[in-house]
Amino acid sequence: MFRRILIANRGEIAVRVIRACREMGISSIAVYSQADSECLHASLADESICIGPPTATESYLHIPAIITAAEICDAHAIHPGYGFLSENAKFASMCRECNIGFIGPTPEAISLSGDKAACRAKAKAAGVPVVPGSDGIIKNAGEAMTIAKQIGFPVLVKAASGGGGKGMRIAHNDVALQKAVSMAAMEAQSAFGDDGLYVEKFLENARHVEIQVLADEHGRITTLGERECTIQRRHQKLIEESPSPRLTSSMRAKMSKAAYRAAKSMGYSNAGTAEFLVAKDGSFYFIEFNARIQVEHPVTEMVTNIDLVKEQIHIAAGEPLRVTAPKFHGHAIEARVYAEDPDANFAPSPGTITKCHIPGGPGIRVDSHIFPGYTIPRYYDSLLAKVIAHGNDRDEAIHRLAGALQEFTVVGVKTTAQLCAKILLSDRFRRGDLSPDMIDQFVPKPK
Image (tube, rainbow, N blue to C red; front, side, top):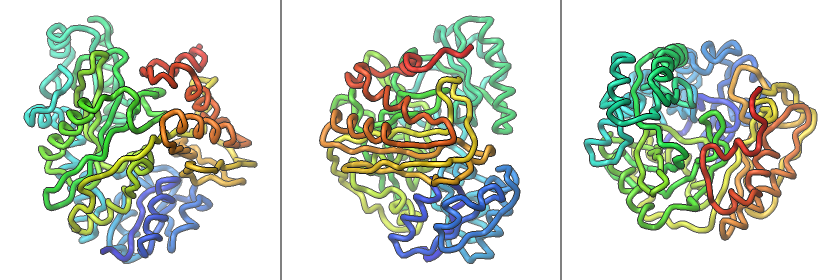
């Protein structure tokens, strides 16, 4: 087992990994940028080291700085968290070359999952249903047009190396498709350094459901149920829950089997997530595989009593999978609290938190890094906290979470906490009648 782990991340996920290390008797090493010198993760870790200026490219995305910090601090392994370098195959390879453990999948699996077109083709060959579309990266708008005519409009143009909604455009006709290809390519090049695109059928109002996977380095794979992630803003998740309110036992079994096949086809190890779209008729389609711990992993932890971060560490240390027959209990829902103004099209709301109150009570968990006096840097993601509620059933979980969000107080910046509470208590959410456009009912239309 590793004795010293460096966490190559910041904010709430860094705090989460530090706490797992503490419980395992492992020394934690935090890295921080100049903008994060007062951030909670830097003070909670056993050791901390500054890795550069505020911008992510000069700090949290700067591979030489991270590797140097690990070597100076004699770290036995690196946990990348999510985002930043978590799905960077070059970084995972560098860790391997420097004989530093990487707490995540192999560089080869990261490369495959990162190429969404190739991953989609691999899953299809393994018998996993995929959304109709191009077999690989398209060459130009003309090829996109040919595919669109075959599968029918509307279509979705997506960056092959994309994520977080970047490099993604919907087209409902020929003219829109020409523009979508051009815009998506430019955005993908800017965000990921790769303008490769693929095209797939756009399933209107399809639900977004994902399956949590754990796999060890010895070929053992298990699935840990699903998470419903349909409530989103700007193609990014806002509320997640497990189990899904609309998945039947039969659908759950079929989707879990598909996730297993996708992971096996990739030779995957460690924690990962197979993401699917579920159409109105109940049919489902694989869209991508996320080769990292997910932001919403606490939802699965609450219904299984399995610490996914600890399992990641055990697997990365070469141990056999400890989870073979997970048991599920109750219902869990997570709401993400961002420093954003929902009334202004979710505009970022950086600033100093003058006061804050973190909710508690039975079945409530809050993963956060904020405190009174904390200044939110403008350089990074605006996530402030994840509030998770567990209940004996869905209705209890909804009311527990809504109550916690109503109690959640942050003075000095705008947040999404109260918006999430309104959504949870709406009749439509309580019925489980979810769709991606549902959030439009609760926020003003952009001017």
